[in-house]
Image (cartoon, rainbow, N blue to C red):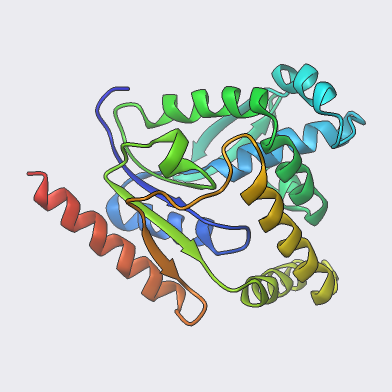
Length: 227
């Protein structure tokens, strides 16, 4: 890859990675890429086309048809699926499980990782996902593994969905998060693991502001040291 400066933020589902990453990118004047949204788009495609989430060969067969693109409108990332803006549709709770399923398929990861690297090329970027620091941008100067307890993450997800008018029981969300953690950590293709050189940041008892400030400080210190 060409020269770039990246902040890679990995961690489990509902750890607040996207919220934090957006604000870190804004503070650094960087390009933000929500890689999870790209997997959600592929998952949405499979749901819409009746491809069973346990049908690995079916997902592999249709992966190339799910054309995922990213564009930026006034600095905000919009996700396109076959030309349609699905930025809101991919946030439905049902799409979360679909995203986890398709992300375990090597053919899907290969397609999306290539696209993610293209976006990073020659830029200052902030990416969040499950394997940014280990697989997508393994030589990123700044790596953070952002986590929180399953209970805290389920509560945050519950409150987020409530604010959107989606009434999903807290207990259901907690079980889904625990299952997602297990699936993401044990899958054969690029499992979710903390990179050896990633800073561990537990946000269970931290505000968003505190998490953002910590990561921005890491990035600025790294950029200053590289001068």
